[in-house]
Image 1 (cartoon, rainbow, N blue to C red):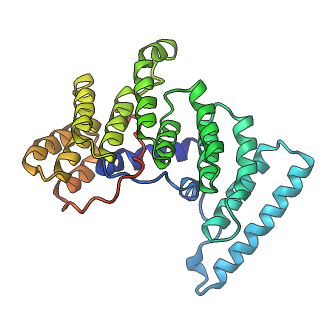
Image 2: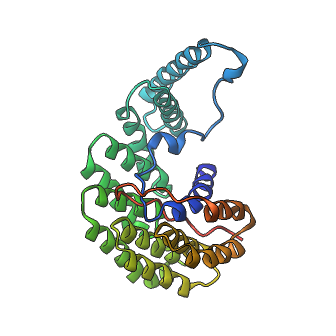
Image 3: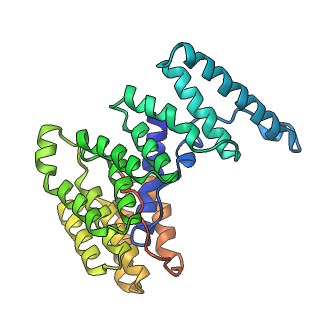
Length: 292
């Protein structure tokens, strides 16, 4: 799971700041695994519609094969992961349904409690089928042992906002921050306080509480003046409010502070023309701090 996890961090680190106060829904479960492995077939090698049909048939055969293995060995993780991957690939081709990935995810989450990605994906799947209580329980299970898990925090926040409970979302993040010193004393580095603070700002902004959002970003900036994430989030918020002159020096600062691989995207964000903000929704995930 390390490669998908690393991709997630890279993908959301800038998306967070670009969309922090506009808000987007939880990343669909299919997208989370869509590129975990190379495609089974190279569709460019066979023109026409047959490659897609051939691939579906092959994936269906794989599903049946993994199911037979699991009948004999219910906890065979290789088969569970293969079944999950095949069913997700079928879903990406509009075959099957989300319900089909829940059982293998439940098994994998139970067998690998330290790999919280499985529990988070399980929560996302349950949320997509309308089982909001099941989703909440899956997120709570992660947060009970890893209160600083950013994916679980973002997912739970998104779920609470979807239920029109912004105060509960804010309270969850504030409680996480209040307990972060003790949590990080017990397990150093387990709570990325800057990321949680930026996520808190994005929740305020998604509710159009712009002064509170700015205050959250400013607090994060004070906590670590060399971290580009809250600087960029504040710049994006100011820009979307029409305060381009105030945003420009923040964009410049964020670009100077950010690792090289993010500079181009920050510069694009600084020069992009703002679009009308959609209705408030769930915030994007707060990324982990990139390694230098």
